[in-house]
Length: 158
Image (cartoon, rainbow, N blue to C red):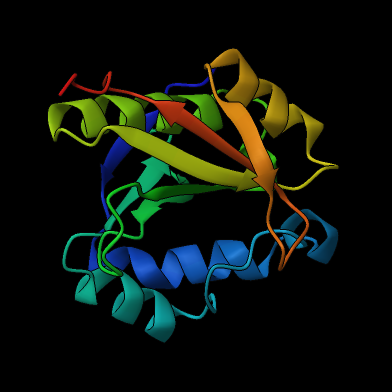
């Protein structure tokens, strides 16, 4: 497992993240398209977020990807998790580390549950999510991706 570093996104990360995203094989990015990946869009999306959160992944030297919690700014109580790990860093623990970081962050900030989508053919990611206690609650009508969720804080009794 790699030495996984996590920190808040900074505007100066955008050009390098855009370069990394542009260098990926189209098949690798086929099911990850939350927004355009040019540096200008990345800066705009990440820096204009009010409650949504964006972090970068690194190995101490190089950026390895980014991850996010989105949906707060749209008024949702349950955010959606998304992660991109550059193919050259795949299989080294970055995805699992980002998921665990986000789950801890949610508990610390009293976010009761978390959701995500995973493409049916992305069995490696699906296995990570299921191992971490997520369960299916349907399919996304727009993409056909599996919808997964996890209760992080038990509901309180009335």
